[in-house]
Length: 97
Length: 350
Image 1 (cartoon, rainbow over the protein chains, first blue to last red):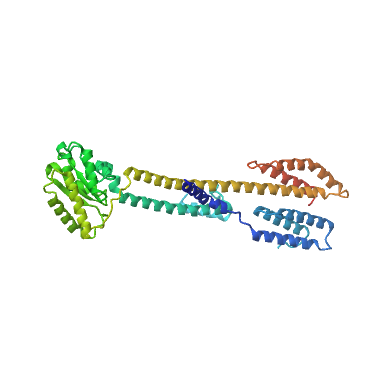
Image 2: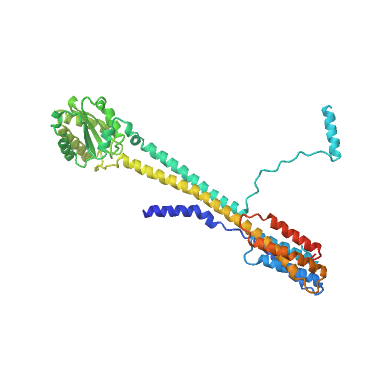
């Protein structure tokens, strides 16, 4: 009886193993790139010569990019952070590449 | 219009850039599955290959078992079926049609005495009535029984037709000498020793036992004790259980693969929905920041535009907040884009 039960459990575990092992792949390269862009935006905001309007826009997109990167961001969140950071860099007139 | 003319016309039209391209039918190819699903399905496929190998091995194993057990499996279709079924658990089979002068009027008592004589020796005695179809070819009957009882020495007797009729033995009797020589010797010994015991089945059983003991003493065969195999019904039950377990395992793997794929797809749908909703949230956050940044010193035109879009903004916040998996997000996406465009047109955050 116990052998059958153990066999059944082993079968179920074997069948479910791919599901248990499957984890969404973390886009570390994308996340690093997004953080780099945010860092670059912060660096651009340190420029004392920025106009108030440009600084406000830069701060806005830095906030949005940082919010997207918070916690354990998904691939879509990382791409969104990149877009916000690039928008911010354009707003302050800094190079995006 | 000739074909050359037609081609020239087409070339001229192409040069002028006015050729019509054949409309391309929309591709029916499904978009590639997201990476997570692909990886899960690939992992499941690897397991499926393992399952396939296991099924092939199981089929080979079952085939080998069937080949090895073929005489047993065909037993129900054989004339000797009742004999073999009895000898699976006994050392004697007396034909029910044997006359009383042979059995002494009590076949059960005679069978008991023969059993006592044979004891645990791996020998069996089969006594056939003269008019039995099995008695027509005693050696054939003997080998038909032997093919299903591997580890015994068999004596087939037809008491009404001269007693000892045939002997044969299985492959697993533990023979230590040449089987042909052993066969000849045993046949001669049994023939001589039972020559005057034609009606005496117990006497024949004694001679069979003595002959076997002599062969053991000479070292012709190993000294063994009769092993009784499980009856055919047990084999069938065991085979059925084995087949059932294999089928259940295969079904479990198949069902498991389907479940895993379904769960992975559901997770992927959920992930896409969360990404979409987060994107809308983020776009609304930008609009919120734009509205909040408008201080008292902002131009009147900007403040008026902001006041106009606030109800729409609040409505969109409510809609996005109540989005559920499976809801259509096209309309809120379009409305958010339109709201952002209105602000840009008004000079807010441009």
